[in-house]
Structure formats: C-alpha cells, structure tokens
Amino acid sequence: MQAIQIEEFGGPENLKLVEVPDPEPGDEEALVEVARSGINFADTHAIRNDYLTEQQLPLIPGAEVSGRTADGTRVAAILAAGGYAQKVSVPDAWLVPVPEQVSDDQAAALLLQGLTAHALLHSVAHVEEGETVVIEAAAGGTGSLAVQLAKRAGARVIGLASSPEKRELVERLGADATADSRAEGRDGMKQAVMDANGGEKVDVVLHMSGTGFEGQLGALAPLGRIVVFGNAGRHPNEVATNYLLQTSKSVLGFWLMPFVLKRRELIASMIGELLGAVAGGDLEVVIGGVYPLADAARAHSDIAERRSTGKLLLDPSA
Image (cartoon, rainbow, N blue to C red; front, side, top):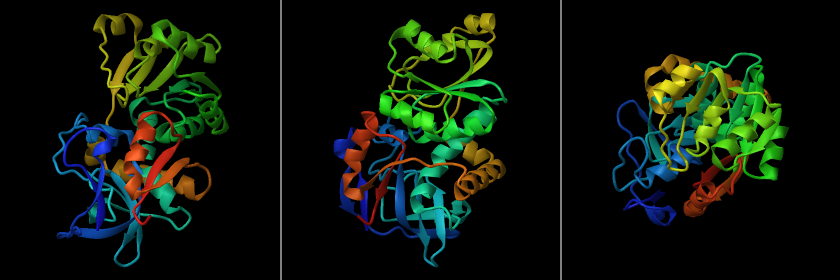
C-alpha cells in the first residue's frame, strides 16, 4: 500500500510517499481501508518530535481516519499514528460506526477536533450559560467547532482569527464578535479581547497558539479560566502563582489523549452527541481542503503557515 512516511525528524519536506507492507491486524483488530485521513496541527509537531509524546522512526503520521472495514461497515477511528496511509489496523474497541447521514469527510474531521472542542468547553472550562468565551484559531478545525458548541451552550462567543475572511467565517458560524489574533504585545491582545467584549473582561479563553497568552490572561475576569490546549507557536509561557491568587483566575492544561484513554464512557457519549448533531444538520464541519496523499507536505505547510481554514484532509485514493 501507499503511505506517507518520514525517515528523519524535521519539517514538511521530510514527508515522503512510499510503498509499505499492508498492516496485519491482530486479535480483536480490524483492517480499515482509509477514505480520509485527518490532518491536525499536532501532526506538524509529531514529525519534528517536539510534541507531547516521543515519536519513533520510521513514522507514518496521522491520528484519525474514516473508512470501511472488510465487510463494508463505515467507521472512523482515533489512532496513535499511521493514519496517512491507504490502510490501517485499528483495535475493534476504537472503531466508531459512522451514520449514513455523515460523510467520510465529516467523520474524519470530527473525532479529534470535535472531542477536543467539546471537552474544553464542558469537561475542563465548565462553561455556563451567559458566560463569555474567547476562542483562538476560531476559523480552524477545533475552533470552528468550538464556536458552534459554545453557542449551543448559551455562551457569548468571541473568535480570534488572523484575516477578515476568517473572521467573516467565524461570525457566520455564530460568533457574537471577532478580533484580530495578530494583536501585538500583552496590552494589544488584552485590549483587542476586551474591545470585542464591549470593554468588559471575559470568563473563558481557549488558548492554543502560545503567543498572546499574557494579554489573554490579563483580559480574564475574576474566576475566569484560560485553558491551554496547544502551543502552535512553540512558545512556552510561565505564570506566577501569586498573580493567580490575587486575581482568582485559573490556568488549566488539556490534552485529549489521556482523556480518551481514561474516560471511555464519557468519550462514547460525546462522540454520539457530535455525530448526531452533524447528522441532524445542527453542527457544521468546515472542510478547508482535501489533498491527495502525495501532497501531505503541502497540506502541512498550509496549516503551519495559517493559510487554511477549517479541517484539512488527505485522500489516500487520489
């Protein structure tokens, strides 16, 4: 079969289309013929080996797929790796049946980023009706879903995005206001967020960039929560505990994988809710582009350079 593989860690230029043996499923595993492979910003970290877990070479990246099992059943799955390929072997327990009304594109785009958005809002930040939520990268895969889910929870939503076109998309998805994510410096970011909220401080920030953190923290109201779920800018931040004490603010971190492993029943419920909302037309999955498998490097460059909106996917058949 064909797959995208790296032999050394580095940038998108190391993503090569190669021929590799078909995976051989073990006991209680299924072979899935991949229809779509999801691309996540975390993949750009994984190929550099600077993500949250150590990667091993050679590496076939990719942590989510949609496709079909040998008997034709439509499924989606979260993986540890291996998704950028025409076939994957998946433990039976990790297979998610896909409703007829949900496309392969939607299924591959929904699992990781939909679960992340849902967990950030409801299991970590515990957003309440009437609170104001600021969402970074609001035009991206996770952000575009978080905007809609926050509105469904009764929150006032402010989306941060880097261009007028992206901010227009975020407003179409239901955001009450938007702001330029490129506001510079602590004061610039703080002011941009507060201006978008009528001069008032906010209750929750979903932060993934690594930049603008201090300004967003400064824009939090007492009892506000900022949830860090990424570090796209590869810029670590530090927080003084005395500041948190004095201001009654919370800084939380979230990575989906431990949540998936430890909260299986809750994850199953969340997946059912998300797929049901998409099937019923109540949740829009924004697909920013479907690339041939051989163009994985171009897709990585587009997502890393912020040229994309919504979810990027690979088509292993193209």
